[in-house]
Image 1 (spheres, rainbow, N blue to C red):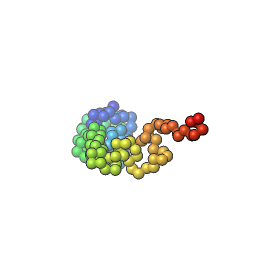
Image 2: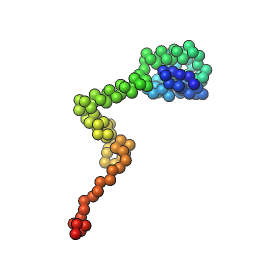
Image 3: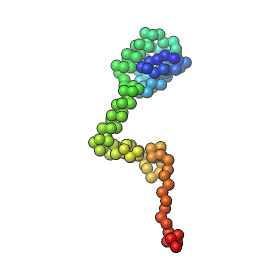
Image 4: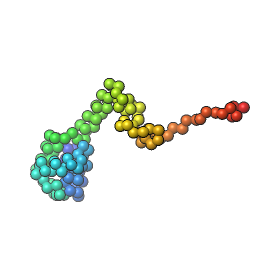
Length: 127
């Protein structure tokens, strides 16, 4: 398996598809990176020479935020939103949907498993 930016990419797939296994690189970016490095994107990843791997690595480092850098950047953005007390920061803190989705139904992915709340007891049950 070729190793680019500290990440193993699958060697039996085309180069542009293999590059999408690196977090922060999507399909469009992968094709643009191949074009910028002068690499045929239809070539299999195992066929890449050391020179081509190094060119790809340099291009990615120069033009993209990937893997750990990207995660740190996103975490810093969320921390900043929480600190300034913006609406989005509050939603992040409470674990609710951030981008305007409804919460009365759905939103289970963000809110987690249902927590049952006991209903009010009726007067009949009190006697």
